[in-house]
Structures are given as structure tokens and as C-alpha cells.
Image 1 (cartoon, rainbow over the protein chains, first blue to last red):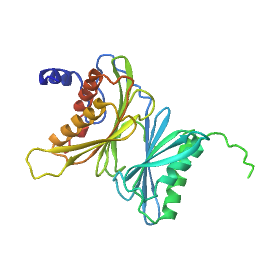
Image 2 (image 1 turned 180 degrees about the vertical axis):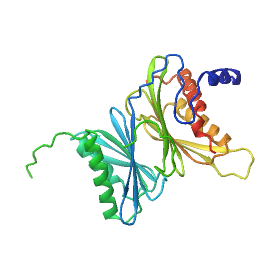
Image 3 (image 1 turned 120 degrees about the vertical axis):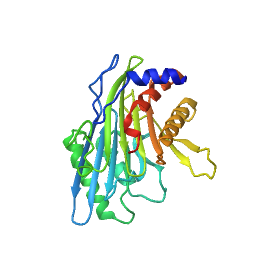
Image 4 (image 1 turned 180 degrees about the horizontal axis):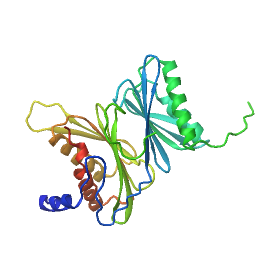
Length: 152
Length: 132
């Protein structure tokens, strides 16, 4: 990649400080990706949520009192019976915080999910609260499948 | 509820982000860049999902020449240009003085080198990665 070419192309593509984008050739301004951010203040912790809605996937980040990325998990339905599988992408595999959230979101939405979560270990109540808040927002965004009748 | 670009009011939400959409070689590409406390997240997709996810970080070294570790953590592991893309981006981030690792997700229809060059130009053009 010649540096002269890069400089020329950079001068054509300019992005403003506040996220405004100057039009370039063949530019499409309407993004299909929506980013939702919200915060829930609990008694002793503050939970931050960020949801990126792709058309075929959901990315969600849950922050507990901080803006660190935390551990990254991916979950999806897998063959042969469409059971949900979860894997840890970044972070310790022995830490299950976040993996169960990812798994249950796949169960409810049917979409592939990538979840980043920095909730500390051994906080089941906090994890449950975070999952509930996230699920509420996903429901309001229209992500849930119709409820099926359960025989058990 | 905030949607679209965040106008970086630090007291409002701790993670700032930019999202925009570009047409690269006829393919609509959605790009989201997020800045966390300890890392950057860059997502570029043409296929409606995150695609291959890579992790890149600058390694601590006593040498003056920086070295980087880049790995695919999810998705295609046999596309060298994906790794090259992450490598270029982490080096660019490092050149601005930031030591934060990068999580890069690429969901592309075309894996040719030209497409990666376009993506590099797009990411380089973003002033957002430059740390204040």
C-alpha cells in the first residue's frame, strides 16, 4: 500500500469528531446497524448495557461499574438438535459469568449472540439482574420469538 | 435510549462509539467502533453478522521495535488477509501511542486484498481511534 495512495484516499474520507460523516463517493448513510446504550442504577452497583443489532446476530456488552470489555462469549444453536452451544472467546474458561446469559439469549431469540461481560465472579444475583434487564430491552426491540407451548 | 452515534458525553455513558455505513466496491458495509476502558472493538460487516473475530494486542517488549500478537478467536482461520487486516490496525493504533488491545470482527463478502485495503483506509480515516 503506497503511502501516497493512502494519503490521497484519506483526504477523500473524512469523519467528523461527533460522528458526523461527510459524504464520499457511493456513500450509503443509512446504517442497518443500530447501537443501543443504556444504564441501570441499582442500589450498590451500576450496570451499563450496549446492544448492537445486526440483522442476523446480536452483540451485547454488560458493564458492572466499569467500561472494561470483560470476557467475551459466543453462543448459537448447533446441530444436530439445535441445542445451544456456548464458547468462551476471550477470558478464562472457568468463569461462567456471562456464558449463561449468552446461552439464554440464544434460547429466547434464536439468533447467534456474542456477549461481552465484566460482571465479577460469584455474583449470581447481579448476573440474574443484568440478564433480566438485557432481556427486557431485547424484548422491546422485538427480538423474541413467539412463546412455544412447553409440555414439561 | 441512544441509537446511532454517541456524541461522547462521558458522564452519560462510559463507552463511546461511532457507527456508520459505507459502500465499498458495491457492498454496503456497516462499521461500528467502540472504545472501552481497556480495549477497542471494531466491527465491519457486509453480511449482517459479525463474521470472523480477531484479537490483536501489542506485546510488552524491551526492544524499541514493537511486536504484536494477532489471533483469530472465532471464525475463519485460513484467511491470511483477515490477520493482516488486524495486524495493520493494531499497528496503527499503537502508532498513536495507545497500548489497548483490539477486538476486530470482519464479516466480509470478499476477502481479496483490495477489499482489505479499502477497509484499512476506512479505519485509518476514523479519528476516533486516536487517543486524546
